Length: 271
Image (cartoon, rainbow, N blue to C red; front, side, top):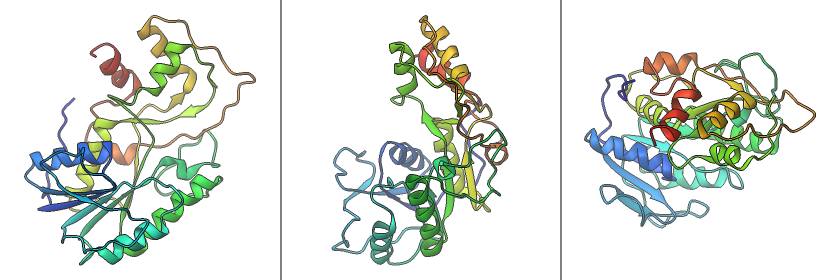
């Protein structure tokens, strides 16, 4: 599959707030497309030299204003909440960028369990503290910045091999749990598209086309690795959600890794 995204105008300057692994990959892609990337994090020393790097801790007000930006992507971890970090960010901006993307998580739907696919039209009803914090962050980002919301499912890819290590170690798993995932490559493509298309959706579920019980994914991995299936946790509990990825597919046209088989093949077989 191609690693392209729909054609659109690349913002001249993009502010990446909380620039970790995901933000770094997005920023590198934007630089290749001609954008100037300004990256904000507590310790930016390990970020690429092609970025303009700013050391800042958003749990406190910033000492100096941030540079003007055409677009902004917020990838802050939930931590103790989003209210103070987003307030301090708003205070430090000379103006709100014309395009803002807030990266949340499909865990905002914790508590809404069941086999029926959840779409972007479904309102989150947080059933855990983490889900509540995520939803609060989404609403604050919309209120303060007019943000578009991207909700990735479980991210996997190079350096994100937790399930591979679990299966290799024979760790017991809850085989009946419903799971959703997105390969990091497709998530970066989605974020790039959200910055560049003319009319991005207000909310987007970054999930591939193959939600599956965890047992199915683990069995596929065990076969790839040449190890025994990991034992099941009993009793089997069909918990978890199913997320609909139709809107992401419409946005990108196709996914580089539309299902876990392709994604894990690229990690295990292709190396």
